[in-house]
Length: 244
Image (cartoon, rainbow, N blue to C red; front, side, top):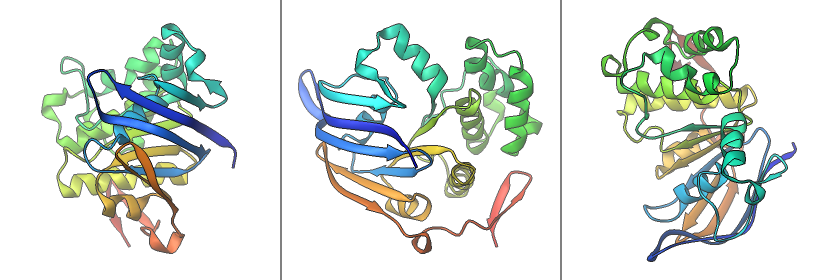
């Protein structure tokens, strides 16, 4: 596999304090990996994800994604990078309430002027098992359905990298399992995924690599054997997954 992400001696210090800061982090993520970033609240894991996404800039050090040094990009360049190369899934969905599920999915594609945006959006909703809610507004969707819409929105521009910040944090256990199963299936199809979570069981059950951060520093970086992880033989039935 080829290297997709590299952080070199990255430090991030916020004005007025160091909560959530990073201190000299260096790591690489390869194309096709499913990596979980773990750590307690304030450890710096979400800061790390935001730096990889180009949503924030390091105080020092470099972040390179797909051969592009994000530090060399201006704001317009970073916006294009996020649009074209990265899909981001948030804990609280961030769907626009006045748009339907399909319209929410299409927002990034419309910004990119993709002619086949609507067909691609409907195909994604179908693949995620929620094509029947395409014309509903977020208020009429369950939490699990909203998160699937958010995942479809993150995937609409076929990003190199899918970043997920506590994607199950606002869901009940069953819906969270469904979302993690979907992420695992996307990984099996070749999608590179970086997941931030505080849940050790989720991290070790689904990810192939777990990076632990405490007080802004990487304290452990473990690649898991296949036998340690959740079996991949999953049955899809109208968007509801269950292990054999």
